[in-house]
Length: 103
Image 1 (cartoon, rainbow, N blue to C red):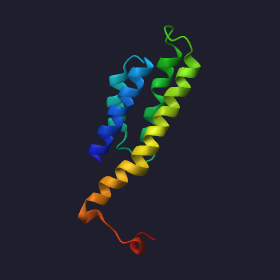
Image 2 (cartoon, rainbow, N blue to C red):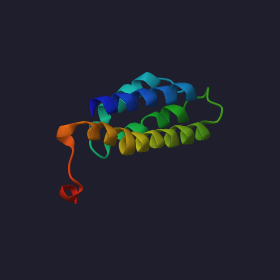
Image 3 (cartoon, rainbow, N blue to C red):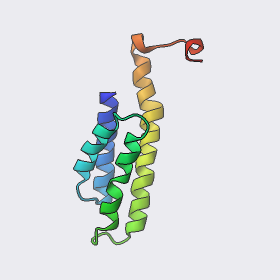
Image 4 (cartoon, rainbow, N blue to C red):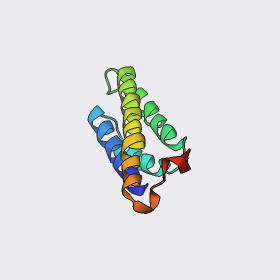
């Protein structure tokens, strides 16, 4: 989980940095920590940069930038939650389960 959270936080930092959000590294670190809170943590971390984007007067189109940041973060969470974490769990022998046990 730590490896997956670190990769997800790094991608969030890169996304927010290229969008031009101030404190992108801070939001990346917060995302890393919040990703350990099941279900709601990543979504709380997605909402934190939105006021910074909205009230930054240097951004020409804040609503489009907010939408891009939100959709980008959600897309990254889908990829990491449904592909990366599953592959990391699958690769560990002691974490494998038979499909009948899961059902």
